[in-house]
Length: 537
Image 1 (cartoon, rainbow, N blue to C red):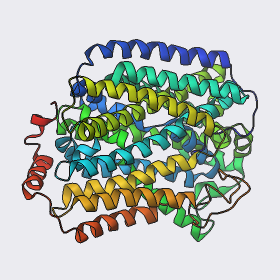
Image 2 (tube, helix red, strand yellow):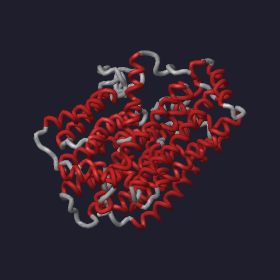
Image 3 (cartoon, rainbow, N blue to C red):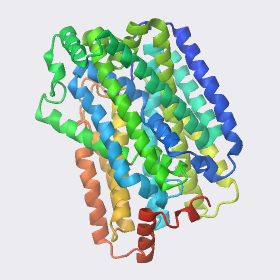
Image 4 (cartoon, rainbow, N blue to C red):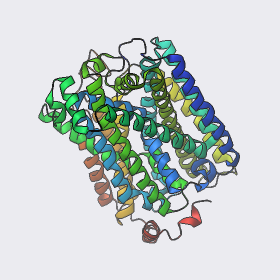
């Protein structure tokens, strides 16, 4: 579903020059905003957390912009167009995840932390080992997510701009990477947040216009639309479960595993968690999630109409044969409805989506290295004035260059496993440790290390031995087969394993953590008392 690679090439149905012009206008407007936002980037709190100046509504919009990636937008519409009901299950998984974030993470995290996830874990556990483990986990998740988005830019080029040569696609990946570096380098979290807010508004508005258009063509009757989709496809099964995940017991188990990763991984994605620190209070953090749930929920309802609209107006066979396969459904539907102009707008929104997501990932990775490794571990919590932000900016450049090179290398490959691995690692390595730290008094440093390293290692190992890497028609490595793990997503194994390892490491640990620190963390996380004294220093 999340594959954004064009294995076949054809000319874009729209006007590539118009597509580029609209995208250029977006870049110009957002760049002006980023430069204006950069005027106040003086302290670490300014650069990492935008001075904690955003309201819950603004931050919720930015979370939606950060979370709704091009992969999910194009991929979910395509999945519904081809697989019907089973495709819509992705939307349900992505949306339900925010209930977990709202109930278990958002407010407690904002009360306890400062800039990164590691701040929460290191509050009552040993600083050095926990911060290093949390930084490694954060960097791995961000890297795989970044790689998927950057490689996705190459696939979008073939699909939307008609650039079929690999060199041309590589140039566009480099341009996306350069813009990303500039956004984050200059604007910090404040500039990145405004880019994400603008992108969220554009994406939801664009999808909303197309949704109303599709419904208008069907008399604003959803039943008529569904009947048209069945008629075009000639397959009533598109309205029933099981078309994609009911084929065998393995496929059903695979979907359960993927669902676990999506639902639990979202609440532990580092770039999502970091957004909770950009608001002034825990109340605003909670409000952020409520806003995000509404915006993301409305968007995924739009994808239901757009997916079945594409199935009705274009047909699954034509979609599957287009460059990018299932991911061409939304652009082809836009061209069918509004010609080159609407396709140009959707194309620009897709590129804007990539820019906003990679900017959020980049600043999260940079903050993790500069704050958790440099400032807290290397400088033992006492870095020279201004040095932490300088290191963060240098890290942004390094991460950007690595992302560009990795994206060019992964262009044309099956990048679905990268996104799945990012969610699986977040759900396996991060969430158990966060939950234990917040809610289990006995939890120790050894338990945290067992959980994080065990979750990270098992997720990577299992997915390396799965059909997404070898042994399948769409595997990353063709011609070999070392897939001994039958599932495409390791979540159903690695997530319970990480929880178990966290428990086991704690039970085997003869050292005990400070009861005073644990009590302080419990009071602060639940009430917010004392939180404001530390967050801005």
